[in-house]
Image 1 (cartoon, rainbow, N blue to C red):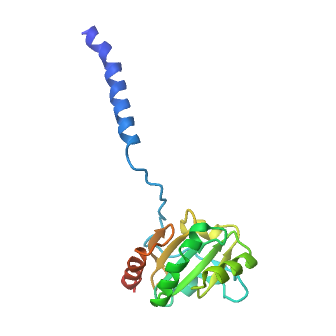
Image 2 (image 1 turned 30 degrees about the vertical axis):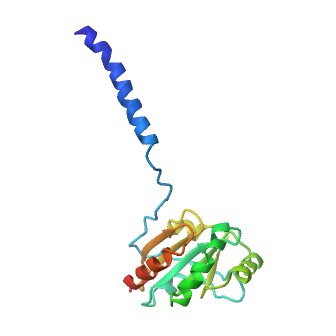
Amino acid sequence: MKRRLLWVPLLAFVAIAGLFAWMLRQEPNRQVRSRLIGQPLPAFTLAPAVPTKPGLVTAAFRTGQPRLLNVFGSWCVPCAAEALQLAKLAKAGAAIDAIAIRDTPDKVAAFLADYGDPYAAIGDDRNSSVQLALGSSGVPETFVIDGQGRIAHQHIGAIRDEDVPVLLAKLKAAQ
């Protein structure tokens, strides 16, 4: 009986090592989803990020019409990469607002001049407080907000061409 007990630590070690090896081979999920999906937007008021656009308030998302809320930064390379797709969404009739993260008015204006401006309003979130309240973990991120001001969908990362019809469908479903 004592001899069999000597094998228990070795078997436990082999089982743990096997589990560890299996977990290392799994594809990691690096996306942090917002816990607010299906919940109302947190209350916020953001000053305009550029003088030519209005700022953002939570009440603007309770008009009965679904909208996209794009979180971006002028310093963000993937944000520049998704500009063409945002233009396609706007051309297809999507209403798009934005939150500029840790930015300055002159850099946001230069970004819009270089990559286009699909936004109806852009709020200035210099300290990322609204971004964090939304459950956003980085830039770019785009949220589908239904007409009652609830977060219906979160798209993490740059919008690619194949994401445009998906986001348009999510907007339609959020009506």
